[in-house]
Amino acid sequence: MPPLKMVTSGLQHVAAMYAGVVAPPMILGPAVGLSAAETAFLMGASLFTAGIATLLQTLGVWRIGARLPFVNGVSFAGVTPMIAIGRAEGPGDALPVIFGAVIVAGLLGFLLSPYFSKLLRFFPPVVTGTVITLIGLSLLPVAFNWSQGGDATADDYGSTANIALAAVTLLIVLVLRRVLRGFLQQIAILLGLVAGTLVAVPFGMTDFAGLGDAGLVGFPTPFHFGAPQFEIAAIVSMCIVMLVCMTESTADMLALGKIVERPADERTIEGGLRADTLGSALAPLFNGFACSAFAQNVGLVAMTRVRSRYVVATGGGILILLGLCPVLASVIALVPLPVLGGAGIVLFGSVAASGVQTLGTAALEKGENALIVATAIGVGLIPIAAPGFYHAFPDDLLVILDSGISTGCLVAIVLNLAFNHFGRGGSRPTEAATAGRATGPVGGTGPATGSARRADETGRVGHTGPRTGDSGDTGRDGDTGPHTGDSGPTGESGPTGGTGPAGVPGRAGAPLRERSAAAPDGSPAAAPDASSR
Picture 1 (tube, helix red, strand yellow):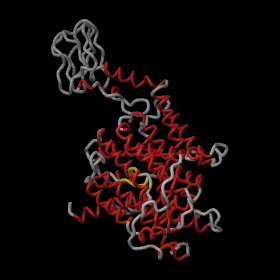
Picture 2 (cartoon, helix red, strand yellow):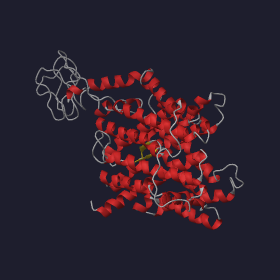
Picture 3 (tube, one colour):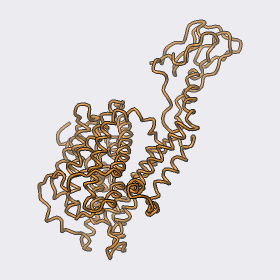
Picture 4 (cartoon, one colour):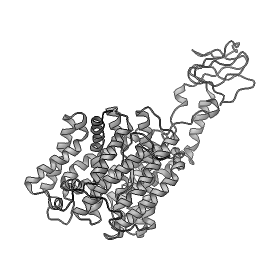
């Protein structure tokens, strides 16, 4: 690919993820008492660490990295738990405690990566969709707060001017998404932030104070906010977040593998998770946070059909350059909070919509899946709808309980295990799989008396059936029936298969689509025995 096109395509990936990378530090900075300049530093550090994580993911080192066009950045999943940690620890110790928890969670995730890739059946769409939906719903109140001005103690908090500015920005973003095409449509949120800021300037709603203090070139000083501290409750909370991030990334790798026509196998997922978790463990060294895949970039690959991982690696290099230029991060800090709130409604709402889309594949009509989703979302919304609900609990527990994402994820996992694995629904997938193996291809004949072959002796596509007198093997779609066996008294012949051997009435084969039906939790049914392949 020509260098100019590679840089342009890489910039497009940066534009698609830029607002998502800088939003978490912009949320967290004011929440833990940082000044505008310190928040700008935190945003630059997030860009820098996102670039490192993206390079690890795309180029890879040893067995680290999926080597797919995969963009990594600061995960939204950690925002709410980190705010809860910041409130519990106070302004002085908030970031050191957060960084210590992220380091431990990242290292633990790195060690678990080979095993986590084997546990996908415990994270079906009914769990991942619930978690992603809760991430979006948990962040929407942040956008509403921004739209009012961000500071509840300010005189103009909730003023008509602030809300009007947020509404104008939201309208601009929607109009740009509707009328623009291609690259410009992908950066509609970024253009909306610029336009909203320009609208705010004549009304004196933009603060230029932090711009003069920023340098042109800078490096994210290691442990700028102090050495990491390690608190058990914070570590537990961030470990849960890391599991959520690993689940999100796994789902995105599976989707991206299909798009680029290189299905993500167990080794690819293992390498991708190692890149995620190692990037997360290294990020606090440069004042960054937990990293995960950015789903909007997966959609960008599908839309543009530019599947080169080197294009995304170029985007990672651009992110590093932006992180090394503090003045650019300060320019981003000029965006008034009501402007960010208006765009945040779309940004965070799209995360929730992505979760709903995932739930659409979760077979909610089967078993107790709808009950799992309803309960997990209900519990996850408690800290949002009733912030003081857990006020009587110990402070160490509040770090976890005050995060709707953490509690909702735990509830979804436990209920899925109870209903779809260990509970009443646990036997259903097995029964379905057994029934599927016992039946032949569409229209084929059933087994005969005598020495019936084992169900795992399935024939490959296009193979012919057994000879005269042999019992009918179970075959895949396209297998032909027995050759010239004598038909039984009541044997049923299929449209494409041969007639059943003599002795016992043939049994009509179940359609193939029934054999491959989803399990009750929305995950695919068990595949045929490996010995058939």
